[in-house]
Every structure is written in structure tokens, then in C-alpha cells.
Length: 125
Image (cartoon, one colour):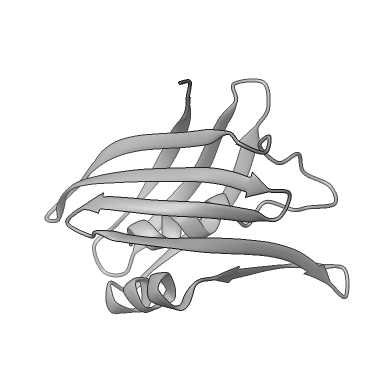
């Protein structure tokens, strides 16, 4: 479920939608009903790759790569994150980067349980 959130973060369109700046880190502690607390951290390490870190119920690190093929945006997440998403039957909808607020927003859907909009806030060192 948390991994779908991360997938969303990285599914921002490379051609038409602004992406977060390279080196930017976005984080959030969220409480998921019936599941508990989960920390999400995403760092954009280059123009099409992000590092994802999850701590809490799910403890996993991985990456996401974004590329365009036949005018369609393709998001490829690392196999370990994909396995977790499948295990928890979750997905992410309507990902977007708000360049005015400098936040990453997406809708987390956990099948049969709930949907929740998640907003990751930029972390400043």
C-alpha cells in the first residue's frame, strides 16, 4: 500500500508535468486505518529516478524510474517494492507535483479497505 504511494510519486509525466527538483526529498508520516503508522521518504536522485524508503509496518527501500514510450509515461518500480504493493493489494491514483506548494500528492487505494489522499512535504536539511 505504501509502495503504491511511492509509485504515484514517480508517475509524474516527464513531458507535460513539472517534476520535483533533483536532490529534493519529500516525506510524510501517515496513519493508515487498521494498519498503523508508516513513514514514506522519496528522494529524486536524477531526472527520471527516485529513491524510496519506507519505515513502519513496511520496512523496505527501492527505486522508481520514469520514462516515456510511445508518448505514454511508464513507471518502473523495483521488484521488491512491486512485490509489496501486490501483497497489500494497493495502488496509487492521480499523482501530481504541486510546484507552487512544493509537495507531492497522490491517492492511495487499498483494495477493500479505503482510499486516502497523501501529501508528501519537502524536507529541508
